[in-house]
Amino acid sequence: MAQTFDVCIRGAGIAGRALALLLARERLSVALVAGPKPQAADVRAYALNASSRTLLQQLRCWPDEEHATAVTQMQVFGDLDGSVQFDAASQGVDALAWIVDVPALEQRLAEAVRYQPMVEVVSEPVDAPLTAVCEGRSSRTRSEFGVDFAITPYPQHALATRLRCELPHGQSARQWFSNEGILAFLPLDGAQGQEVGVVWSTAPEQAQAWQAADAQDFAEHLQAISQNALGSLSLSAARMCWPLQQAAADHWCGRMPGDAARSWVLVADAAHNIHPLAGQGLNLGLGDVQALARILQERAYWRSTADLRLLRRYERERKAALAPMGLAMDGLQQLFARPEVPVQMLRNLGMKGFERLGPVKHWVARQAMSH
Ligand SMILES: Cc1cc2nc3c(=O)[nH]c(=O)nc-3n(C[C@H](O)[C@H](O)[C@H](O)COP(=O)(O)OP(=O)(O)OC[C@H]3O[C@@H](n4cnc5c(N)ncnc54)[C@H](O)[C@@H]3O)c2cc1C
Image 1 (spheres, protein in one colour):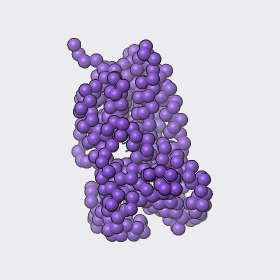
Image 2: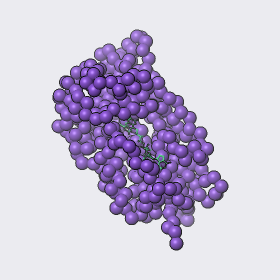
Image 3: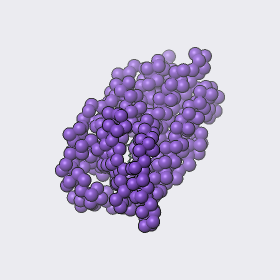
Image 4: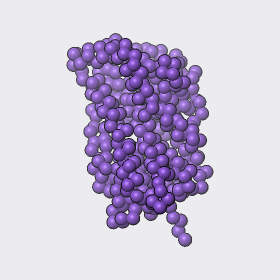
């Protein structure tokens, strides 16, 4: 007899694999549909918060210290002399975030899936009461289900790579806002590391030109934008580009076309995209994973995983969590995208004022750490 599944997960990225492992722990049988392997390794490193870390630790997939560097300080610089600093000690925590090597995390998740007997990796979608769509921002299944995905493109691409630095990063994450966009240096390789993950959000033509530019010229240009903070820099990985967008699906769950007994639900980037400037996209996605797994686990024994009341509860809960984060990222991106001198002065003055506002600053830091 053919194997039956409780849930079919389409997409074996970080969100899809984490969801598969979490549901399997609740004794649900899962088919995980894996797409073709990517051509090149991901050069990115993600800033993950405490809640994502706890989830990945519970799944025994949190990478070792070398691949998950604790951030004890964050420094944000404006284009005049405005700056804001956060540090873990004054927030009463061990780390503000962790910078996680993406290939290392993907490998840990893939291994855990291999040893989980309740998860079967398949190459085509299978029938199940619930289909969870974890196919990322360009999800084909979401389009097939006729979901409206309202996209607002930013006039920016993110150019990501890695740099070796003359000076140790000192576990500090640094960000520079300027007319050339937003440049982030994220500490890698553990506490003593001298390598940083780079995310530079800049005009598309600028991103494309610098992606193709001579490696030494590129490193020197970033050294100038970063005000020589880590000394001389050299490129240590390929350069990859992502167009940036804010996007959200109008509805996140529904009945499978032509089958009233089966349902679908959108999870993580398939449901929403935000600007990566505060490194929150996957944190929100893993929040979706936790909420969906909890709601399915708490259901009455006679309710199916396809029950739309459960899925709508998940949608309401997660849309509420997403709204403030999406608005904040959009506002910051727009404030720093304006080249006019008064706006430039205003944002630097704003940064200085913010730096003096102890309780407000503390509140903002806690919001960023916990979402
Ligand atoms: C430059 C940049 C930096 C970022 N930095 C951070 C950060 O610091 N912190 C943070 O929290 N977030 C960050 N993000 C956001 C983060 O990348 C995403 O939120 C995260 O990758 C979403 O994971 P996902 O599993 O939903 O989607 P994806 O990572 O896109 O995975 C989707 C998977 O589904 C597969 N797939 C697609 N279609 C099909 C199909 N039809 N059938 C089967 N499989 C399919 C794909 O091959 C892929 O494996 C950043 C994003 C960018 C662009």
